[in-house]
Length: 233
Image (cartoon, rainbow, N blue to C red; front, side, top):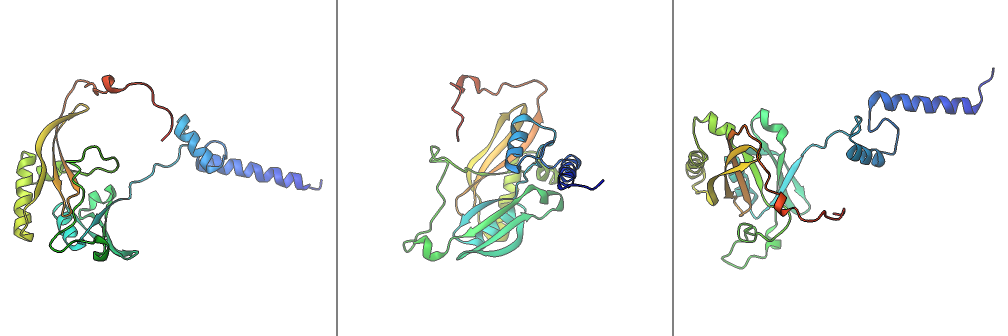
């Protein structure tokens, strides 16, 4: 029996369904990609999209050399240097192999002609500790728990003292502390945390995990929840 065009079309459709089922690309049905992502996000479908990976967080600096020096104290080193328009830029990655999947920092040097600095002055990042009403990206956070253990230290303050000594010995500069170490309970985990200013005044949080509590801890959100918000960004 001769095969009609409809026969070939039907085979093609069956092949498409089989491929979709085999590779579980986005959904059990071959919906358009955007629609399938929406379904995966809202319905918890077993064929959900692959999780997005954190790639980098970008920080603008007035002097990329000084910024690289500061972040080298925290274990980052340049992996790629490039141009971003008129600016010099670099990706920094953790120097230890086991940490390299944790993402990168991107440093972008604002050209001097754009800084427009009056003579004898240096531009700084906005001090977000003093302007808590500002929205948007607030700080970079680094977990230093493993480093504290590796050095045989007991507390975040000891670790920061060690870091400050290295900074003075290598670069002749002391650290600028935004918030000294203090304890905070987050979920059922007790942390020590502190904040530094980087070379331009951007905030860097340091976290030291101390212990986990066996009991369930209230979030404390309930009194602040208020009415259900409207569904828009």
